[in-house]
Length: 193
Image (spheres, rainbow, N blue to C red):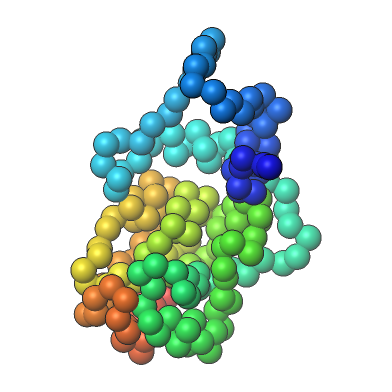
């Protein structure tokens, strides 16, 4: 029974650490050498040195995917916690204006890094997939969609660290309610250039 999720295993492989891992089920462990990079106490901030280390380490190890990756995409989180109930309509509207629809879990870690690193425009509702903003280039424009009752700067801090342009689109709905899809699309169109 594998104790690691696929993305955990891929991360350790890219770092060259998987073969050095020992999975222990007992209560007592003796550690000879330990390196730990920790986030700050606040969930909304990251240590700049840690971000730079991750970018330097992972970006040089990615393998260019065989298939062409989209440059403009909407990150769907349909059916996930805190998704707007009309998110499918939002995804369709993005498709109508020429954006691809992406579900990050359909991609390997390598392909997610490549996808975000090559993007020019990314949109999505606030959620875990936006942690991949650590891989974007400074030319990328990010449109993060929030319900009015859940505005957090987590993804914005990642985007700003690399110098990318981040737009917070705060809707007038609350979590788990429908959002104004037309307003979101209008805001994205208005700020694309």
